[in-house]
Image 1 (cartoon, rainbow over the protein chains, first blue to last red):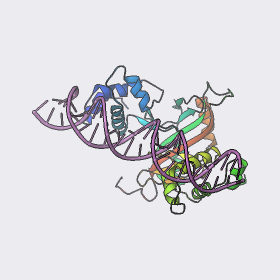
Image 2: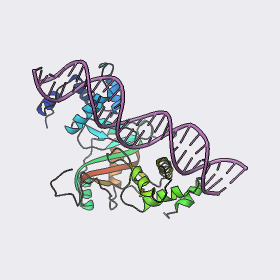
Image 3: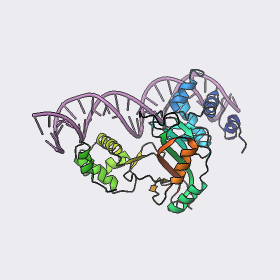
Length: 143
Length: 143
DNA sequence: GTGTTTGCAAATATTTTGCAGTAAG
DNA sequence: CTTACTGCAAAATATTTGCAAACAC
């Protein structure tokens, strides 16, 4: 699976290549922090002073449709986004609200089991695990 | 694990027992449809003409704190609620948006693996599987 | 009676939409 | 030059909060 760059993909699909779109996708590719729309907007508005939230929302919509980002809901009031679109579980810290990827796993068996037991035709999955991250675990105070 | 009724639990925890609270919890216990706040409100407002959305929200907050309902986010704009608080995966139909429980599974091994691989101290999990339900699968039209 | 709860309305937060000006191709 | 895109502001949604009247105990 060769990774094409965003410009190429946008052109192929008939979308225009704009600096905003490149910046938003570039930011998502370069972080592991699973930012929300607001976090993306705030991290870009210094370099793109006219950037608007609406543009971030619209760009994320396109990226979702192109399957270049996946949307996460870890239980907060807003969504978070991940440019790692390979199916993988996420772990969320109850205390510091960090969201980490778990890339080292495969769960073909699990999916197969759910497929059989549920009688659904399973196409995708979102797996969230909640607990305490390495930095927060063992400490008594709970936020 | 004996199931106590809501009146008993509310009294024990110092909450007052009100008809609204009993109705909301009763409704959740008696359905497998994983309703949203709005669905709960609409199904109760005929019997409780003065019921308000704010009361449903406040009651659900209490039920969450008492661990009597779990909150689901299956990717819609609003949450859904499940009075089955035992950890279990949910399967969601892409086409008819039905949400079903998968009760016949245990995934101790999976949790153990995530625990080890992520170095988090995992306390709970939310597992969502997306696809086509028995009624919708095999049919070509995708909503 | 006292203190909590209800339920209205207003406030907040997030996301979506309309549209005129702007930029990409 | 044509069409899609940006970004402002307004609208739509979902949820939370303030508070007076009503209810639980």
